[in-house]
Length: 139
View 1 (cartoon, rainbow, N blue to C red):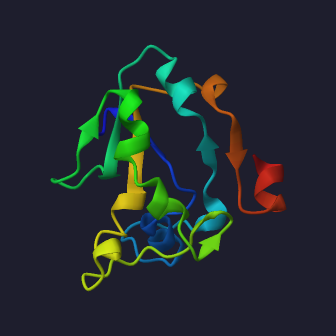
View 2: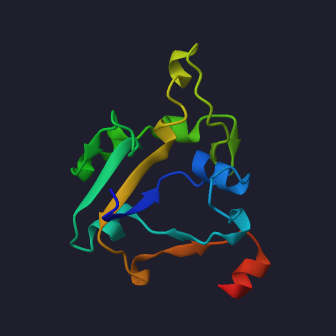
């Protein structure tokens, strides 16, 4: 995994939430410190480097890795990513709920990733995301 550049399909993640709340040991950064790099699957795949995507958090032993991009629409839980209630078009909740079959893996499914082997040049990016105008000026 560490040979790949990871891209999340969702704009927010439990890890970002934990980082912003100061709950990641040894990580002094917060949301305002982070610059998000955005690209498309097409741009990443067009680099000619190996790519892979997962159906959930790729670090989990039971996640499934795919290399066939034609499976992207069925492997990634787009319905979980965009279900109501929404914030900016994406589901605002990440908590799993073992008592609800629809939500029993809600935390890990929206953490599906697209990974590009090696490096991803800046020319591949479609835009950058920052927290506020001060970070934008710095970037």
